[in-house]
Length: 213
Image (cartoon, rainbow, N blue to C red; front, side, top):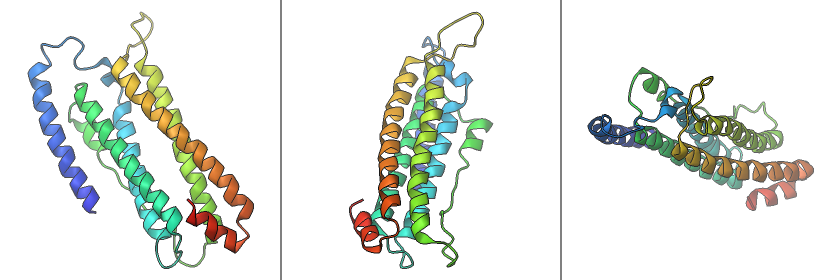
């Protein structure tokens, strides 16, 4: 909850500061605001990162609890939660820096949340949930690669009579950096999933795997 409150305050300060600057230069700077803002993909991306961050933070707490005691996966989830939070903040800054405004669409995307993956009610097979969580981390990054790649193709569009132009080279570079990061994470989690699946029925091996995450 502290993260959410601090993040909300920081977002508000960023919004106020950047919007004041935007209001001063909007009429004097060619290409501002960016044509890419005709599409709300940066806001969608921001929301995705924040939703994922909260989901992973809460799931991290579950794996680190006395019920499961899997500190390795808990740590990995916490690191990924922090990374997605930072990516969400960077996406918000990018949106504002290219001339994005705080309107109804923004406020709808700003409404984010999440929950832990586990029930912790004794009905789950936790060795299988462990594998499912690793695979979910992989799936999340793969989904973001697809989302980011689609947005990147919009950002490199140029003027053409038959299409709408969303092109913005700065946004394209920003998105490409995130594609590379998510691709690395997807490959890493795919390897972890394969490894864990091969030893999931060996208790000692499971513990050693978690220790080395």
